[in-house]
Length: 251
Ligand code: BTN
Image (tube, rainbow, N blue to C red; front, side):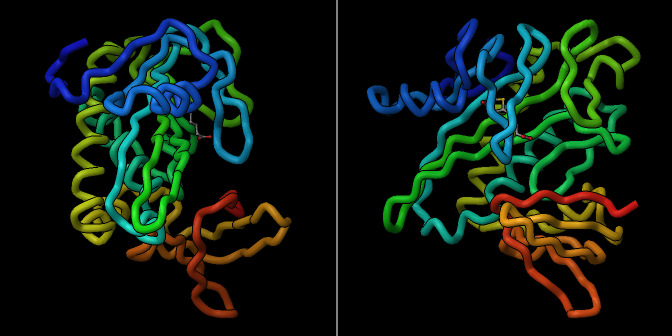
């Protein structure tokens, strides 16, 4: 796969792995230069919040990218939002008739249905950190096991004509690299207006649930410069870090 990907970012491509995030984490223990991994299928694809990510052969894009950051880990709170924006930009680049939205922290959705998601595995080491950024995009799931939530794929959205997976993978690698370099240099502030233009819950009544069962209902007011979700209710404006949180519309 070439498609305009710089040599340093050319991916290793595997037929089958358990999870590209896990495989990249293992590979990095012995090969410090490896940066991008693509798999045709995953036997144990991982989603956010401990979920399984269904990964049938050739039906999706299953990609992970490693990146080191010379930034204190507390400055990386918005990394997962940046990964979501990069994924939305790659989809928009290859499918110009679609308008992918983002649902905090990093779901990519169209018509309220999930099209792609990102999983970040972060390792913090003092004043630096490294991340494995995993992205799954539903390309063509016709005729195979379906995800267990409202979902869609690029084949359905394109009237039966999904984009070329190699070109989509190349666009995703380029967009991720571009977005991550900018984030490392300038933080999340330059992405705020892009986030706002793609934010599908902005101004809506939402319910946010934490892993400990704690719930908050309020109106979504976008995100702050650290990528925290802003929720407004009678008690005031709350800044919520992503962590193990789920976000749903109330209606
Ligand atoms: C989500 O739950 O929305 C995140 C899904 C992330 C799936 C991708 S597929 C490539 C990479 N490897 C994994 O095991 N998960 C991520």
